[in-house]
Length: 162
Image (tube, rainbow, N blue to C red; front, side):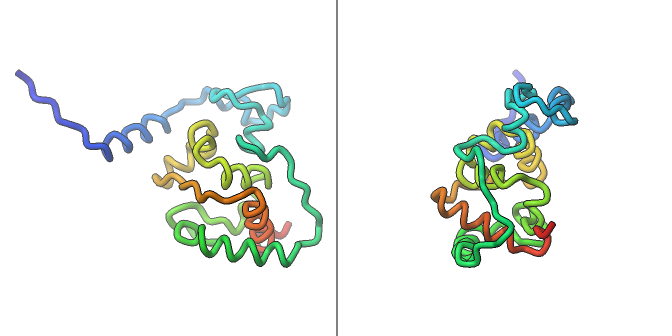
């Protein structure tokens, strides 16, 4: 009789993440420049969801002027909730965020903050980040106003200047 090893819960999680990261090139067609919002990728997301994320935030209006009071509130929230995993200019537990607004739309950032679990499950970019960093972003239970304040703080970062 052949003995089979028993997988520990952590081994199952790692195996699931590794297998989930092996998606092939099926979703590449919509990510390579298609702009029709009706098109979907292999995960069933529209181009708009690829760009803006999955969640309650469909549109964010930003002015050229930074709201300094909102940014200070966002900095306080960021220091309390985010610095355990994120730094602005270096890889840490999670990716660096100083230039996040040059890489992602504001809606994406806010949806990642507010709708973490669904973004991890459905969004191909977030799945790639999970495979790279091996640590899922926890839900910090922030309100939409909190997420907007963090976004405003991220706008103050030197790499965010465009």
